[in-house]
Image 1 (tube, rainbow, N blue to C red):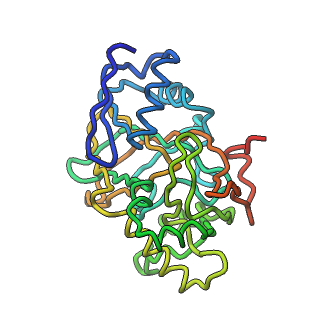
Image 2: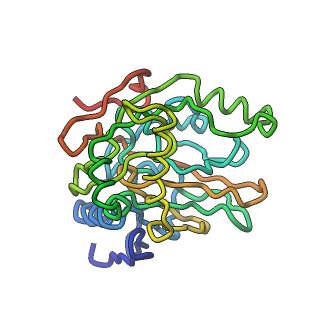
Length: 298
C-alpha cells in the first residue's frame, strides 16, 4: 500500500486516487485505506483502471457483496450484476437521486466505469449530503431530524407525454414493472462514520404525515442545500476511469448535455444495510419485495 496517494478534488467532496492497481486483488491494508478515503471524501476517482466487467466486479467485492444489476431493469446479457447506463436505452438520469432508495436496503456504494464517451458533455454530478445537513440552519436541522419520507419508483417524472417516445415509454414501463414503496428517515446516520446526511433525492415523494403539496415544499427546501454548487463534484469523464461514491450519503445527476450521442457506463453496486435515523429507528417497507436484487442482512 506504500504507493497509494489520495488527492482532494474539491473542498467538500471528491478525491483522485493513484498508486494502486485496482485490476488486481488488493490486500487488507489497501482496502482499509480506500474505505477510509471513501468515508472522508464521499467520491473517489481512479484513472487508467484497465478493467473489464469481471475485474470491475472483483474490485467492488472488496467493499462487500454485490447486488444484481437493478430491481427491475435488465443487466448486461450473461452478467447479472452489471447495469449498462446507456444513452441508447432511454433518457439520461438527469434528476438528482440516490441509487435505488425505493427498496429497504439501498446500495451502500455505487461504482461507474467509462465504456463509451461522447466528444463533449455527459458529466456526472455528485453531491455531499452530509455537508448539506451541516449547512442547514438549526431550526431546519431540528425539523429534518424528525421527518420520514416515502420513496417510490412509481411517480410522475414531470416529462410531458408529447416528449416521451415509444422507447422511453417502454423503459419507464420496465422501471415501474414492480412497484416499490419504502419509508426512510430524512436524516440518515452513516453506520461507519456516524455522520448525519440528508437522505432524500428524486425517489423521495412524500413526507409521512403531510400532504403531497406540503411534502414537496419541504423536500425542495432541503434538496436546495444538497445541490449547492459548493457541495458538488462535477466529474468530466475520461477513457478507462472508475468512479466510486458512497450511496449512503450522496446524491448524483447525469447531465444530459451531449446531444444524444453515444454514452455508456457500466454500473456495479455494493449491497447495503437498512438505513437508520438519529434515534436508531430503521426504515421499513410498504410495498415491493426486492430480495432478488439485494437480500436484507439478518
